[in-house]
Image (tube, rainbow, N blue to C red):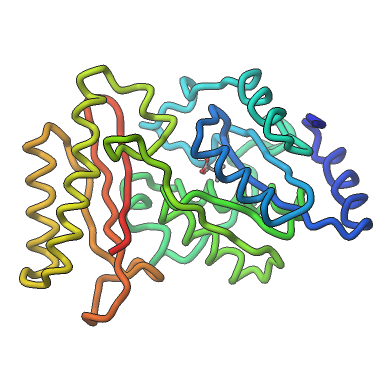
Length: 281
Ligand code: PAF
């Protein structure tokens, strides 16, 4: 497994593989890898001949209230896990190479506001600009045929699909289902910040979303009332919810027709930890 930290070194390696007609799969990550990430890597391996993983904690997608400095950095363990899986190349750039003139001076990519400034975007202003910008930069360095993202960050996945569509990027985007613990809690690097008691409470988020999904299927309550009832349930379980939203799964617009395919999206704080989750209906 090659580990490279300069973008100038990555591109020629990938070009060589492409000259051999190898299809290139790519999994961008911020490290601190868990089973959910490893599933993304395996999905890339199933669909392509060579897999590149990037590990980079992208400062542009963190807001002032997000803890960029204390984001867990576990490069040594991450590399061991990727080596075990047989990943071909890991790209581990530093800030200097991704933002040579600093973030403030950098060009950026912004997906349309109907997608990027609601829900997560409303609670984390600038977050999706940071994600769209770094993913575009990484795509330019790696030039993959296919890239895999987790459905756990459902809005992020739609942002990336829109970005690729709008900018004519010849990259297939694959979304992989969320991996859950036995009690339903979605795997996330943030779970390690939960205290023992919060960890037990945390399963309540999936329980509330699952119950909401049943209620939607019964179709006997207005959407806004259903969302409000779920928010109250979360509060009773000790969460401080940011939002619970029932949206169309392709566009994240509010539902219009009974036949719309829907997704429930939620974000809620438990103590100092902010959890997000979603469920297709
Ligand atoms: O989902 C993530 O870990 C990040 O948002 C991503 C896609 C690697 C961009 O920094």
